[in-house]
Amino acid sequence: GQQLNQSPQSMFIQEGEDVSMNCTSSSIFNTWLWYKQDPGEGPVLLIALYKAGELTSNGRLTAQFGITRKDSFLNISASIPSDVGIYFCAVRDTGTASKLTFGTGTRLQVTL
Amino acid sequence: NAGVTQTPKFRILKIGQSMTLQCTQDMNHNYMYWYRQDPGMGLKLIYYSVGAGITDKGEVPNGYNVSRSTTEDFPLRLELAAPSQTSVYFCASSTLNYGYTFGSGTRLTVV
Image 1 (cartoon, each protein chain N blue to C red):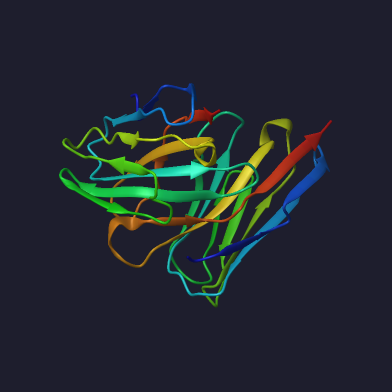
Image 2 (image 1 turned 120 degrees about the vertical axis):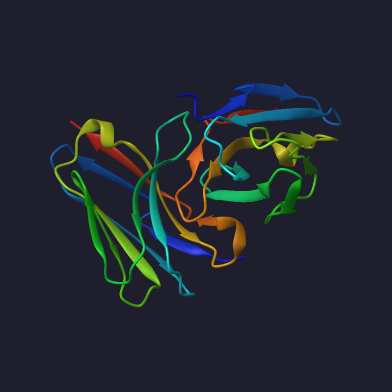
């Protein structure tokens, strides 16, 4: 199956720092999504990207859809303790059923 | 606004036992999915459905079965539980071209 490579696997940062993570694929995809998973919960959609080169923000979060359609990055500015969790990238299958393939996740820890 | 509801939240099974993980959504979404999440891994698709009466295999379907008799419900059946099925199971629903809404998961341990 399709593989998405996410990096880094984990990050330990101090409150107030900016965070950057990325996701790459060997194939082209037309939709990239970023999810966050809090401990003990299901993933929640943060940002959806539908156009190559698109830069989209959601509060302190900014995500970009790579121009090659094979990558995406997510930035978090001025991190706060509630940013702790696992961040997943996902791509949408071009076939029917809107299936998503998920990356292996970036685990973010924020220290005070 | 319940969204996607999964039951139970936790379960311990003995090897060879069977169980059904329940999933229901109240958003009238046509598409529903079952994923499993193993420690340190992403989510792997087990089965999915594009509407009532239609189901199909995902990436890791072996050892599981599903049915979709209504738009709202999409139960996942484990017939002969094995230790390899110890995982966290997530149900999700969506409409075409939008992101998924996930349930809060079922944590299953097979001993």
